[in-house]
Image 1: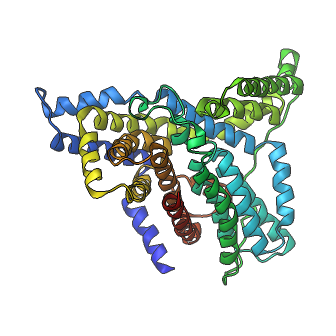
Image 2 (image 1 turned 60 degrees about the vertical axis):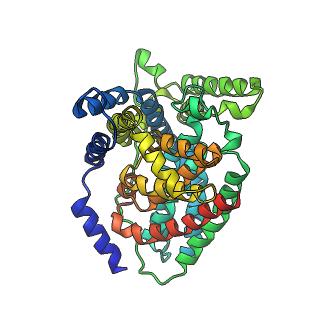
Length: 444
């Protein structure tokens, strides 16, 4: 796979940091708006900058929601309970084949529950399996196992933390006037996505087995691996409250009890699941799993380091959304999209366009805010279901995470590998996933 090494050298040479990519996208969008839209009585510069400034702070609440989702998911992954689960799974990995199967299956499950948890859980699991194999003398293709741990990011947008499906289930989302509110039984819990989930839990682990049976060079992780030090200390006075396992556990249980009681009061359970309620539940689980407040804070301090990209990039994506929405560029793009699609082919083009955009905008939530309005307007013109359009965007967005190395950075840090080590395998997973998700879009 020498072409992969060439690709990675090219990426390192031409691809700047994710923040600079967001800046370049902002400039590109501004230029397109200035050349393709009517500025009216204003100058072109005023026309574009006014649109940009209107949008730049519109995603503040959404930014916090996504930061919490990643941090809380990571915090849960650092708990002792999850550590015990990981230890149990490593005991099942007695060969390269069984390791590939179990790491893929478990990473997918965690990814469907929460993308932050899935990302970190898969990375830690891959690392622990590698160390287990090294200790037991099991021949292992460690880069493949790490790629298997990354598969959580290939399915997350169709899971319980999928930002686009959860966003459109709120009464105040940005496109509510155009498409209304879509409950999860039309998207995440719709028949098509349930089939996609079941199929992926069967097919992708089997695909991992096939990859594991290919010839490989025996590799293991370095001895230095991911550690999280979470412990109580000799507290005095009121500080003992921080180490009280009762306080953290009870307070976390309150979150969970309130969430369950609110769910039971719903006339339709589907209406309960959105970004806020998912984060509410994760908050309670994180507290209960760490029990003491001190341990919870220590784990959170470790986890929060991975959320900086969301915090500083989302305002720029909101600015891009503002330019497209308020300058009229959205209508120009939507018209072009309608011309190249029809009722039958639109889901495919929506999937492909979302997959391409994700390579340059590695943020499912930010991508929905920018690309969602275009797709929904085109879908309504072509009489395509809004729910199907949302899921086409979700599937396309998640699949090219296997190609875009941005979200792999936490995994690479934990496993001690480089992007070029896992890319040959993650690319093959991407191809398999593309076939599956496009088939789902055409069959349902």
